[in-house]
Length: 355
Image 1 (cartoon, rainbow, N blue to C red):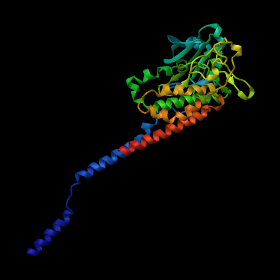
Image 2 (image 1 turned 30 degrees about the vertical axis):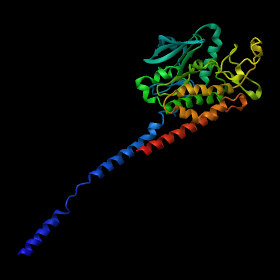
Image 3 (image 1 turned 180 degrees about the horizontal axis):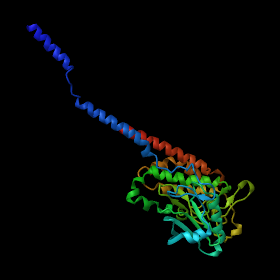
Image 4 (image 1 turned 90 degrees about the vertical axis):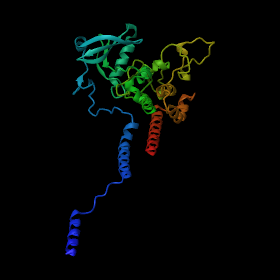
């Protein structure tokens, strides 16, 4: 009888299965940390790579445009359309050649440029020709023009020119972008534009509206997704050293350290400046100015001095007194992209080691 009772007890235990065991408290914490690290690894690439606009594979054909949320391309607006469909709001800028007005077209904010005075009409028309010919990712989008009225309509970028960079980054909504990664990417954009101009479909173009840093910065716009586009194309002379076609930026004497040495009057203070005696030059004057523009773009945020250290050699080459010894804009761009990739990978590696 006792034996039957023992067998029944063992059978009941067998039906109950193995006894339940609680998970050790430390194991759950380790699993949670492993999951968190995995998620952080997936996010690292997004964190260290600036949000860049990609070139639209469905780019509009020449003579057409698409901005904002437009679903299809529209032909450049005609004189009649500019007169009847565009509402001028207020002036937002003025230069030697154009006045720029914030305007409205079909409930979209646009920039309407008007000729300031007739004696600079040729510069205005030259800028329009350049704008029409160089449409693409590096240049502000043209929406329409009217030569009879001396008006040009382009996409409006509310952040304004690169001159406003520090003020923009001080705004709370943009403070997260105030890092060496984003600032270096702006410098990459800037040098990309120079490389495009020096190898443009029209030939080698020199960025002449660049006699000092503020003037240079005013030629470029900062877009809403924090990239750079060229806005002012009024002074882009064509050069070709092999054929002897060189340029001079204006007819006045240039001074200061910002301009390249070959842009300075070479005959000393005792000889009065004469435009007809001033030697011409080529696109290497743009290369001389790159380090100064990039230094402004980098600012003084954490990590910017580290970037300057890595760019020292290429910047030293840009400052060669001999124009022919300076690198090309493409050489500088390659060096910038290499440094950006190197420092980004290093920062990602250090972050992973901290996890």
